[in-house]
Length: 445
Ligand code: ADP
Ligand code: MG
Image (cartoon, rainbow, N blue to C red; front, side):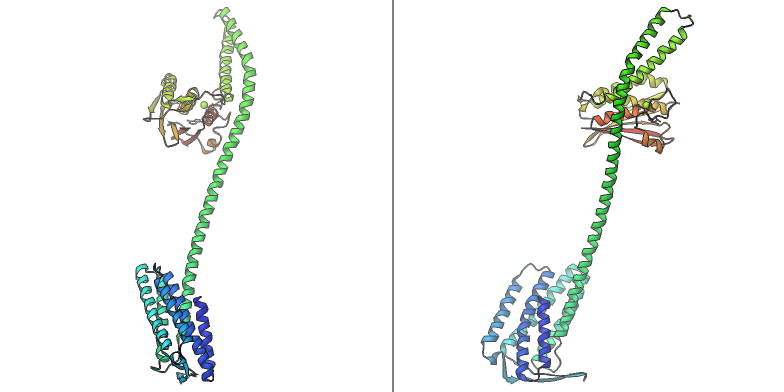
């Protein structure tokens, strides 16, 4: 609105310049003097908003004041506003470049009051602008204050010329440009600011999308793994069950025959071998069966620390033989959580067996429990051979083993994975080749 009114003011100025008689001139002069009231009101409104003035009183008062003047200028005797009877034709030349004749009349009291109040109002605007600048130190606003000062001197000049104090061209119509340019500059810099913020937001969003994609990929991997586990589990369960019965029979007959023959009998040696291998087969089958049966579990509220203590008691004799120490560090005040104690112990035993295998010359296994707001955590660490990055990827796959035939089945970690999963938790590994390995099991509270 400010720009529209300033534009109109300029149009009326052009009208005044091109007037060739007092009758024409007075029409434009009147229009000019009337529109200048509107310009002032919108100007106050704009600056008030920009400088964050809380009170709207000045806007209201100046609106009412200029409306009164507008109405008065139409109603009062022309002698008090503009009258053809009081011509004030001005011949001015600007450094003798152009010579202009303004066909004007002397301003009556109504318009004199208007112009003086405009001057006061602009002084007020200058003051609040400077105050705002001192508070905000906004450089952009400095541009605005400069343009306001230019404009203020323009208006002061016009008033003095209008009052015939001296003879010069009117300049406020040019001074408007400085204000409009300043407004454009401020709005542009705000726009640039918004654009930068927008770009930052965009970048953040891109990062988020990347994070999500990565998370999704991980989830996909997990899903793939558990699908594989389920399939292998079914297969292994079926096969194990089928083999279990004949194996029991083989073992049973081998043992019966062994009892009947004397130790020095030449058949004794092969029979002992049959018995030993059959026992190993049965153990493997047992493993396969637990793996496939992992879904059937008995969950009860239980103490993880206590479960670990019992499991450690089971492994300790074997560890001693292998020159391995077991150091346990139990967290205080672990809450009881829903667990299948047998399965948790199976996880611990599997992890400890692996740790012992990774430290053939002996070493130390560290078992630690801890908690955060969501999980009870069990960490099993060793200072053994460590695991290569390549093997880490396949670690939890069924039948993945690096051990020689007869030593490893490759089922230990996949069982751990399955069991942790069935508890709603997970298992992860951190390892450095040559330094050691830590398996972390997390069980939800
Ligand atoms: P297995 O012990 O029968 O080989 P697992 O599933 O228990 O099967 O382990 C798979 C493989 O993971 C092992 O063969 C071994 O290479 C590696 N591994 C597991 N635990 C450790 C460990 N603590 N240190 C080094 N390697 C390990
Ligand atoms: Mg193992």
